[in-house]
Amino acid sequence: MNSAPPLAASAQPRKRPKPGERREQILQCLAGMLEEPGTERITTAALAQRLQVSEAALYRHFASKAQMFEALIEFIERSVFGLINQITQQQESGAQQAARIVQALLGFAEKNAGLCRVMAGDALVGEHARLQLRMNQFFERVEAALRQSLKLAVEQGGLASGFDPAQRAQLLAIYVCGCLLQFTRSGPGRLTAGGVERAIGVLLA
Image (cartoon, rainbow, N blue to C red; front, side, top):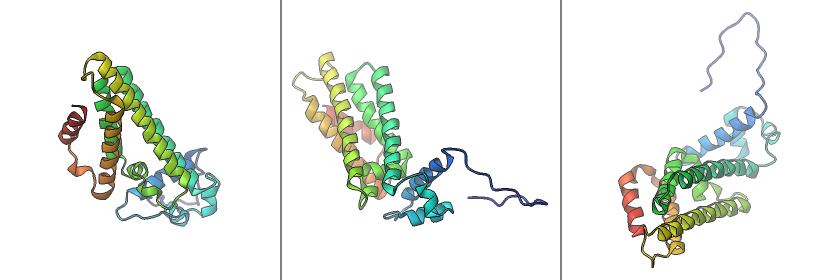
């Protein structure tokens, strides 16, 4: 990955990372290691070795490994809820909002296999309990966004008046969680865009 520098007449001083650059490198490396097949609990020693730095160097940027995972979760939150905000602002149909929120979540997970393991909780096994609690809160917020869109759909007449937005939002959130678990075990290849659309159609019927 790192190519050797060209030969020079004199040794070149090692370039120091810019402020925040090393922190970003640490997070990218952690996410990359989570993507590797068969990866179990990642230690700070293994992470430091991969980055070719000391463990002490890691702790200059993060007080603990839990803080590293929290930073990954913050990125997930910013990315996903940024997408949800775009969807709700651009799409007038409440039913379409809900469908696209589910599709956006699964699309994000498909493109970010390491972060998908964090979202599914697989990467958080054996880590600090507050991390799983935060991911639980993340899905509660997703479910709340789905519920709001489905309430709008009922008001618009896009869904039957007897449709229960709270119950269906919960079912959609459960479907997303199930897909994320499948991604972590066998990859997203078995889940096609057409299959997702059909599943959403059934859950919104």
